[in-house]
Image 1 (cartoon, one colour):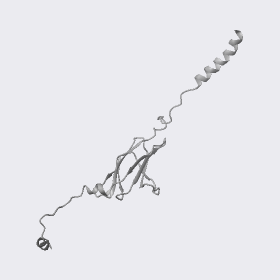
Image 2 (cartoon, helix red, strand yellow; image 1 turned 60 degrees about the horizontal axis):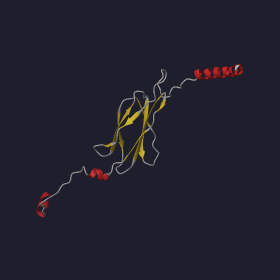
Image 3 (cartoon, helix red, strand yellow; image 1 turned 30 degrees about the vertical axis):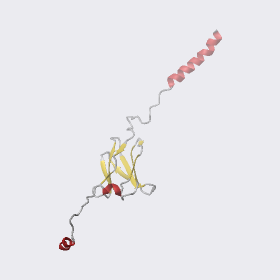
Image 4 (spheres, helix red, strand yellow; image 1 turned 180 degrees about the horizontal axis):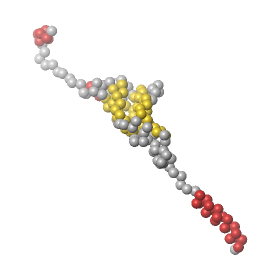
Length: 151
C-alpha cells in the first residue's frame, strides 16, 4: 500500500500543476485594452441611379473601423484596384456601370486588430427591367393631313 501511495503522490502533484497552469485562451476577436475588436462592414443592395448610369450602394462600417476598401469590377475580371476610404461614417457610393453586364462589388474594413470579412455583392441591371419604367404613347386618329400640319 505504501508503494502505491509513493507512485500516486507524484502523479497527483503533476496533474494538479498541469491543471492549474492551463488557462482558457482568450478569443483573438475579443477586444483588449490595447487593441479594438475586428471591424465589420455592411453593404446595401445595389440600386440603379435615376439616370440609369450608376449603381448606388450604401456602405456602413462599424465603429471599430479605421479604414475601409472597395472595388467594383465586371464579373470574371480582376483588373480593378481597391479604393481606400478613411473613417467609419456611412457612405453612399455611386459606381458607373453598363446595363446588361454582371458586376461584383467587394468591400472590407480594417483596423490595427486586422481585416474584416469581405462583403461581396453580385448584381446586374437588365435592359428589359428598365423598359417597364418607360412611358409608351399610343397615337390614335392620325391622318396624313394632321402629320403634314405638324411639320
